[in-house]
Image 1 (cartoon, rainbow, N blue to C red):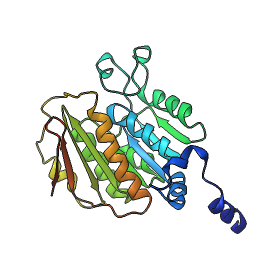
Image 2 (image 1 turned 90 degrees about the vertical axis):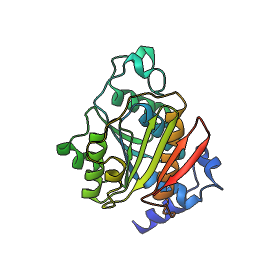
Image 3 (image 1 turned 180 degrees about the horizontal axis):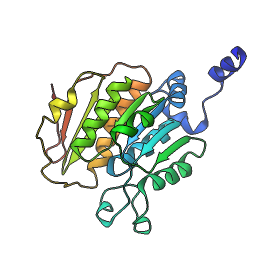
Image 4 (image 1 turned 180 degrees about the vertical axis):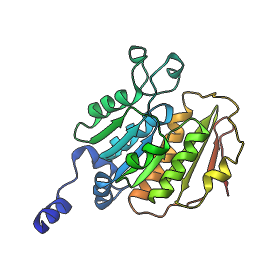
Length: 233
């Protein structure tokens, strides 16, 4: 066992990740391959989160989404194509993962996040990423992450804007973002907002997984129309 562990630590970094080095250390690159991440939702944000994490070297990912692709998804969702209309988003996400990183361990659940399923979905995960599109599910995910003691990287988009935050267990940040009675005005979303938001979420997630310091309890709000970023809280 000791010899095996030593060999794993000294094994060369795969060529596909060589360009990560310099920005990441070899130790951090290896860490990414050992961590397990949960992505709640495989739509606008979820498709990009999956893509970015796999290309960075995260090799253990759990996905959950009970929805199927419809025509209104085609304007912004990476995994949506006309040929896949009516196909389960989780199924398409798993197929995409196999095409990008066939060696990765990706488990895709064709289910919506519910209170009775959350603990099972999050079991063994080191972090969770919020790629949901409604307040109720976000609250549920935050509560489930707090219950199992793992951090949640929140992300949400609307039109030209995006917001991202790291929520640690017990910080109640989601309650501050979405107080009781809060509603979403509409579901406007543009093609460039999901990848921007997903990139910010992924950056926070990678810092977290690598053991780097990450500011928690703070919301970053980005307005891509005016090209402004504001830190709140």
